[in-house]
Length: 278
Image 1: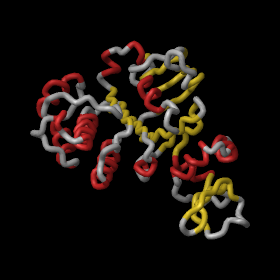
Image 2 (image 1 turned 120 degrees about the horizontal axis):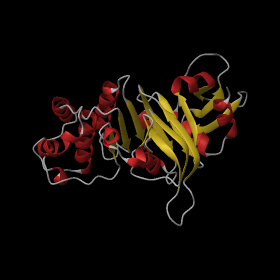
Image 3 (image 1 turned 180 degrees about the vertical axis):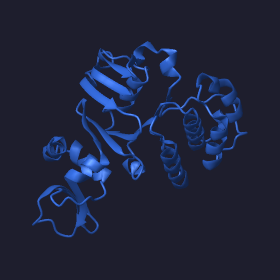
């Protein structure tokens, strides 16, 4: 579905954010994109949607270069940016003005999602709170039923009940024909939601693996004492140590996304070597 080939990108008079970056994303998956602040997560998403243009390389959507912004691509991609610029319209008016650009848009789905997220359909969108604005745009994005849905920091501004409902809705709309990419720095918001982890680090995709594959190679746990364990990475915890070990038993543990991300950005080469082993 998405194929990024040898992508290099940088803003004028600044070092390259990416150099010869390669990435493939497939239908039927929910990807979680993690990276440090300034790593270029938002810029990568904009390259995927034709809102930023690479210095070298290309981003293809179903074999079509998104930089050319053809209608056939734009009508099948929806991007929810971190920064929102809301119109002086109610959600009902917004649908009347915008839904026509998306052939698979479902008005009934839109109202269902608004209700599930507790958004007032009669409120003017640019007068709503930031959290309400985010939820309104999430509802619209889900209702477009585009093949590719990309969300940049979608849970910013959401309270805890809204985050729970968000996770439920995202899980419910994934089909074998749809690809969802969620970029966030709130790692815990991706727990029990994504099936594949992407980590952008040092101008490249350091990790692009399913959580099942990660769990088959690494074990995550809290241990009162790790001095006799072959620990790869550890952090202090209330009950001892949060630790990552090589999985030598064949048993699967839940992937601790935050711990794994911290290990990667700390420069722990052993974790990456294990994950990249064929």
